[in-house]
Length: 244
Image (cartoon, rainbow, N blue to C red; front, side, top):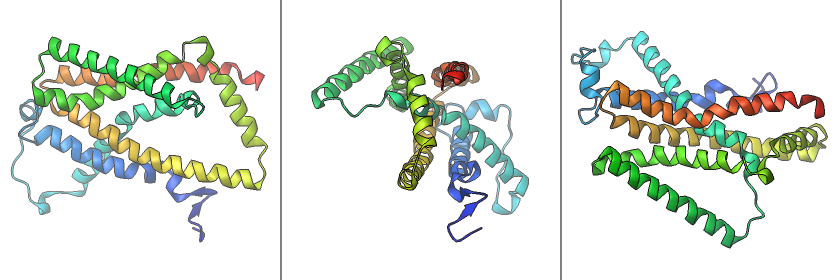
């Protein structure tokens, strides 16, 4: 490892293990809470299948720790789905909107979300705690769907143009632009790591109030729903490769 902490041309914090390690550890604690916390809706469900006796530190083997870290990594990967969607659709972020336009958009979005939340609250008969713990995950799913729907409008469909221009700009960079690109990439990678922790917290709180495996599966399907179009977006970009 050189003095600038690089490994084979890449910075040490750019490796997936490093970027997802904290998220994996955090995810392991969330899984433990969902499974064994007495207030968790899944506590009794898991205890029907798992017998847990009093455990001391000396009883915890390396295989148990490795297994927990593996589960934490899996949870981290699933929980990070919104980050993938936002990263794919980042071409929709613009900084030319007026202040009034942004305020109106967010008022509309939050109003629609409040109406959806209230309707679900009534239909599913959530109590206060269950409703509050579910709101963050629901909002993350909702905002992804809003972004996906906005991309359907003819004026917002030029995702190919964005990636084409980005590829050409990156291919024709002088030293100053390369340093600039490296700076914002580092900021975004660190930002991704912390966004994943937020996503894990939101998903973990929603899973905490599930009362059955069927509830958990339905929740995970809803959580992953916005990711489905991303494969088709990648395939579309691949089909346009000859036009780059």
